[in-house]
Amino acid sequence: MHLNVVQARTGLAWVKSGVRTFWRQPLAMSGLFFIFMALMSLASFLPYLGSALALALLPAATLGLMAASREADSGQFPMPAILISAFRAGRQQARAMLVLGVMYAAGFLLIMAITSLIDGGAFASLYLVGGELTADNLQTPEFQTAVWVSMALYLPLSMMFWHAPALVHWHGVSPLKSLFFSWMACWRNLGAYVVYAVSWFALFMLVGLAMMVLTSLFNPGLFGMLLTPLMLLMASMFFTSFYFTFRDAFGA
Image (tube, rainbow, N blue to C red; front, side, top):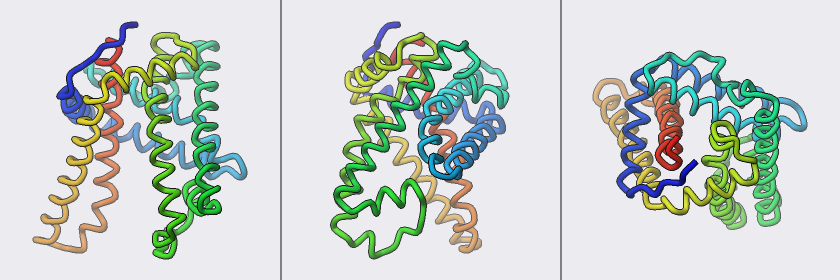
């Protein structure tokens, strides 16, 4: 395993690779993403520990999508079983992935606990339990502060876990070391990740704007109907690009 330092423009190449690979196998990649979303939703619906379980399974499920992207990039058709790749690589790696999932869930729940000290748990309840986001919440200074604090704290958490599942699965790195190497990869390639994030944000906005213009010309009522499936399709492309950030950072 070797950590590579890439140029900032590589972030745009990751976006292009994700979109291109998605359209090589659009049915497979979109179907796997919807299965991924369904599994996470079903887990979160379980009483009491549902949200924590969904969080703990997220690293393994993300690894499954990365493995699917790797197969699609090589011209293969990824099957649904690839989503559980993390648990098919042997008992030791499966245990390590579960440990990683528990660590991620603990970190995320800690962030929610910190925001609860600010707004009395309004934001945490909305995120973990669900509910309606009202104008009263948005106008509350405590709620706004909780949102900004959660974003600030989630950024380093996401950097630590961005490559961790792939490092555990493909390189046999221990969960704790994978967090360190993932952080270092993100930090040393920060320019590329900034370009990557800005490019995806711009692409989401551009596609949404184009859809709004087209529907306004023909049938304005279609915008609300098509926006959600379109954004889910874009999210599938976004997750498809994850593998390329790992491949170029670690020479996978």
